[in-house]
Every structure is written in structure tokens, then in C-alpha cells.
Amino acid sequence: MSACNGDLKAMHDAFGTYLEGQMVSSHGKSGARQAADRVTTDTREKARSYLTRYVERERYVANNR
Image (cartoon, rainbow, N blue to C red; front, side, top):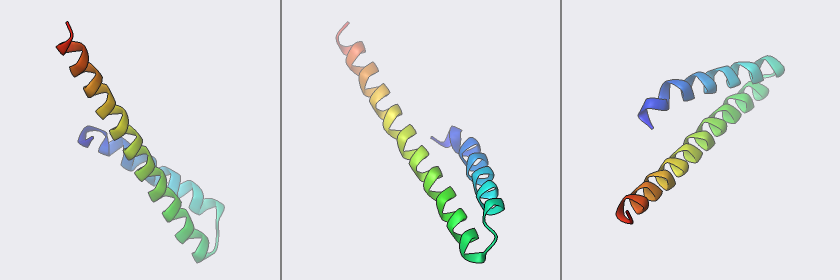
């Protein structure tokens, strides 16, 4: 996961910038930051889940050869 942190931060920042450009009020900017945080968290959790399942599968395959 740490290898992906740079990409996740770049995605978070780009998404936050995009949303802030779409919203002009301070409330909107706060919402944009929260949305970018959610996207980053969701992506990180999906990647963690996928990698965990992948490792478990590879262990299973290795043990059954």
C-alpha cells in the first residue's frame, strides 16, 4: 500500500482541485475536500481488500501444488 501512496495523493489532490473549481462557496470547498478524502479512503480500502484476497489466493495455490 505504501507504494501506492504517491498515486493516491495525486488522485486526491487532483479530484479536490477539480471539485473546488466546480464549487465557489466556502461550504462547497469544504465539501470538495471531504469528497476527495472519501475517494482516497475508498480507493485505499478497495486496493487493500484486493491485495489481501490476491495474497490469500496465491498462498492457497502454493499450498495445493
